[in-house]
Amino acid sequence: MKLLEGKTAIITGASRGIGKGIAHTFAQNGCNVAFTYSSSVEAANSLEKELQALGVNAKGYQSDAASYDQADQLVADVLKDFDGLDILINNAGITKDNLLMRMNEEDFDQVINVNLKSVFNMTKAVQKTFLKQRKGSLIHMSSVVGVKGNAGQANYAASKAGIIGFSKSIALELGSRNIRSNVIAPGFIETEMTAKLSEDVVQGWRNAIPLKRGGSPEDIANACVFLGSDLSSYITGQVLNVDGGMLT
Image (cartoon, rainbow, N blue to C red; front, side, top):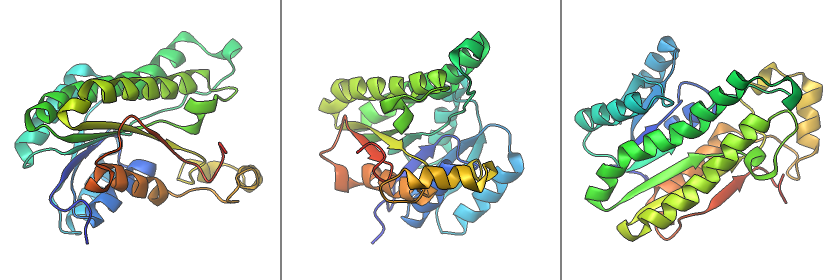
């Protein structure tokens, strides 16, 4: 049984890492996928072909979710290219880590714009469609850092905590129209980015996690499938920590 059969999702920032894992898992579950990427044209073309090979409609769009106008245009383009829209996954994100004493204004502003303002931009852009059809699932990617903070990541933590407050507010605003808004807070997920860390550092992270391993993009993707499917039709305004027990 394919849990997302016939549905269409927009996934921002999907050319690599967690976003790519979500795109693959959604396609395997019968979901048509519109995804965005910022600059990796080759990776996007490759992903588009991989998803289409799984028997769904799939298309990549070069779009900056931090731009209000581009987010609006993206949703208009997706609605032209696909038959409807059911799920939005706000996954686009960056880091510019530094201690507060060394963090400059540009690094703070850029992280807030890409990670938090993009969630406002994209949610606002799909809202009209979701309201008209009286259904839709909004899934926002936060982080355990947004729940508990982290030294050297004040900008990132602020952006990810902001996503939680935003999502809970939207859940209250749009619940009466059968539009659900939930957050996933990933823990230590092993991707291309973490592969650049030394084995000692990665093992240190694993040892501190109750399940004694890092998560995979598929772990996050499976949680997204649940929140995007009808299995979670009575769940809104929640934060699902997918972290191997880090916040226990």
